[in-house]
Image (cartoon, rainbow over all chains, first blue to last red; front, side, top):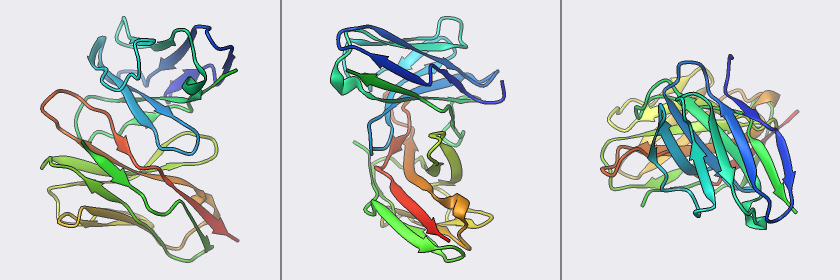
Length: 115
Length: 117
């Protein structure tokens, strides 16, 4: 596709349920990033993949958060036993390769609401 | 730890005016890049402009330019001849090559820019 695609665009879940958010990066992009954006805040880094390798997961807030990219393309962010503080927009970004000057191309995000 | 501070939560100017958004950052790294991203209500984050720390010349992209003051750790965005379509949240962001491995962007809290007709 032409850009980074995220699905679903909106997700509502009850507290305690598990959710899975999908990111389809730009074709050929090696690097993939996940960010969490709380209401009225800037995005915060969660985790980074280079191909299928998860090189940095220092931003994941707890062990309830898990991300994977098994074939080096599509990535899934999974949140287990969701809590109200998990409500946020989850943004995915990709770049052609990892370099400081490489721009990250963002998707439209998934707005997650935990009731 | 790296931090990015945007001290202006909201700004409003008339169409065609020039507006400057401020950003300061804190880092001990020597090799880094700075970015301004625009996020319209549609939510997609769009890159506006980027600046390498080693370059003294300020970056420009059409109506957008930066004032990069490395010693002061300041990175402001100037928008000339502002247009209604410039209305959006603007985020200042930073990335550095740290020794522990790959990192993502560090963002400020954003400035909501409103262009009035």
